[in-house]
Amino acid sequence: MKTPDTERPRPGAAILRTALRRNVGAMIAGTVLMGLYQAAETAFPIALGLIVEHTMQDRSLGSLAISIGSLAVIITTVSLSWRFGMRVLQKANTTEAHRWRVRVAACGLQPVARDVDLKSGEILTIATEDADQTADIIEVVPLLISSLVAVAVAAVALSLADLRLGLLVIVGTVAILSVLAVMSKRIGASTQEQQARVARAGAKVADLIIGLRPLHGFGGNHAAFGSYRRVSTDAKRQAITVAKVNGVYAGTALALNAVLAAAVSLTAGWLAFEGRITIGELVMAVGLAQFIMEPLKMFSEMPKYVMIARASAERMALVLTAPPVTTPGPEHPEPGGELEVDGVRHGTLRGATFTVTAGEFVAIAAYQPRAAADLAAVLAVNVAPHAYEGVVRVGAREIADLSIESVREHLLVNPYDGEIFAGTLRTNIDPSGTGRTIEAAVEASMLTDVVALHRDGLDYAIRDRGANLSGGQRQRLSLARALAADAEVLVLHDPTTAVDAVTEQLIARNVAKLRRGRTTLVLTSSPALLDAADRVLVLDEGVITAEDTHRNLLDGDEAYCRAVAR
Image (cartoon, rainbow, N blue to C red):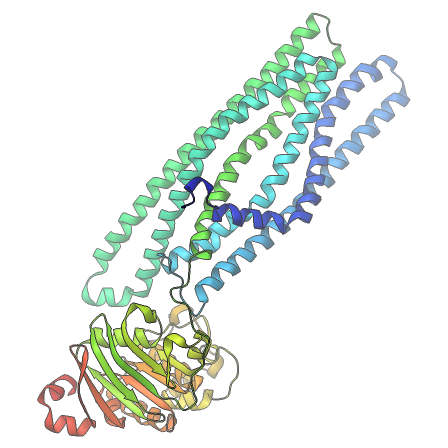
């Protein structure tokens, strides 16, 4: 029997409950302090009424001193309780937002991708804005309770003066909250849609930044900017819609609060005129009527923030509760470094089959670049093993049966567009900080000129995405990182497309020398790398069609000669 939608657990609600549960202590402390603040604020007009009622009648210096002292205590309590209450709540809020940012980032960085239809820019928005707005629930609940305390104290004080005044506050508060609760639901839905559109715009920006140079190269930048403009315009329109809804909500709340305050003041004036309450009670009632506008405003805004926090939590749940693309197995590869691809059919691959024995340096010349990309994706486990036909074996074990950690330790696939991170040359080459093979990797990748060019050497600062490096320098830096990892099986995808022919020749020789005795597979059309390989496999129309040394293939295969000759 299928559980109805109304009975399914809401992942966003579960996230909010988790946030509330692990901040109970801070929320209790914050609630007590903020409740004390609101009670002291409420006590101020009450104290003024009592002063008018009693002190002015006695007209004694002692009564005046007591009154001044009482007001000083109230003001001090207001100041200190607010300061320390907000400090406790904001610390808990900031800490909780950090926890959720780390959780979302951890999901994005897991070795097995999650089955979620979100781009990196959208996940970034979720890890920042949505995490912050979800954590706001830590402040919302104590402020909601403290505002209720203020309204309750005001209602009790007014009831002691005249029951009708207290009932008016209670009934008016319930009516205001009922109206605003209905309006807050629309705010939550509109905000969730706005966050989704902003995230899509952020993802589009990230894509444009990554592909800006090639877009300029073939003149596609105007079309790309037009695409971003459309996405951004959608986000702007939704933001305007949300702003209008928020404006109507805030205006309605302010108007209703003002009506209630005016009703309390006029009623108190009428009761004083009729002699039902004293002048001191009138002063208290008018003061409370003006004061309760602020806690009522805060109280009436809380449903809106609750809906925003819930909408953000639902978006975080898209990442946190998404299942992994594949479920890794428990096994580990056998030592040796053999790589076997058996009848793999995926994308443009039509049953590719080949074996790279342990310690061998093999190059694959793919006549169709897409086929090389599809093969690299399969070997990198960016495609789940169940999503393609055929088998990939690493160390005589099927990759579907291996734990993803063991695959990453045993097999490294370096993409042609490897990311460069903000930091230094050293941290990009050796992120783990082991420092064992940095020098050899720098020499093999011909990155020595970049290191020598700068006074800081390997500690030369690199900007985000390698913005202060040329295309060839970024590619050589990525290659140095792959070589420094010293993986048992290394797959390189077009590692020299952005370097000149002389540098490419030197890199090919250096890589072959450095990787001697280690299993290496290079997907390339570079004659230098093909010539340095022990043997070359030709990948055409998704299958391996030829196998020999580079020079033999040049002599006997015209199609190969046309494809790789420069």
